[in-house]
Image (cartoon, one colour):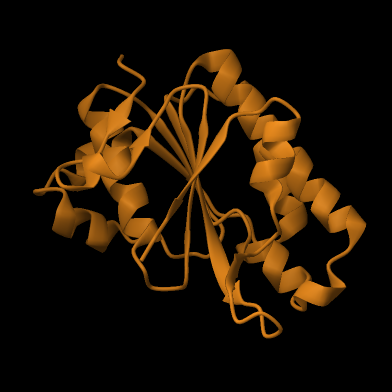
Length: 190
């Protein structure tokens, strides 16, 4: 299977999923991050792949998949494993278990939703929570590199009241990962 996943036009000129790489799609709620995940998994299935889809918000909708998949939803669902952790701790256990699973694409939608629920005030994020998020992303990065597959994650943004800027929940993990030799690319959602 070709492990490069290109989105349909006109999206392919803005975003693609590269093997050995985590692609982080981030934006405010309702901006289309999950729809991009659905398009990616449809393309992976079309290429003969298998998907592990980690849905931390309970937002995966088979009905929405039916709407955009030209009635191929049942075929797609047969080639997917959908996992729905309910706490940040469960999310960590699920990610650690991925090393034993066979997948051509891993989707984590959203990497930070459960993190955000447990650490709701961005000023009060703990070192332990940030460390756990880094461990989870490191495991995903290692799986992507070892198996030559893409990993797609989504993340929410919030408005920093002091600067007025939108920031990704969880901080600047991307920069930290690049400094440690991991490959993570970011794409913003409108």
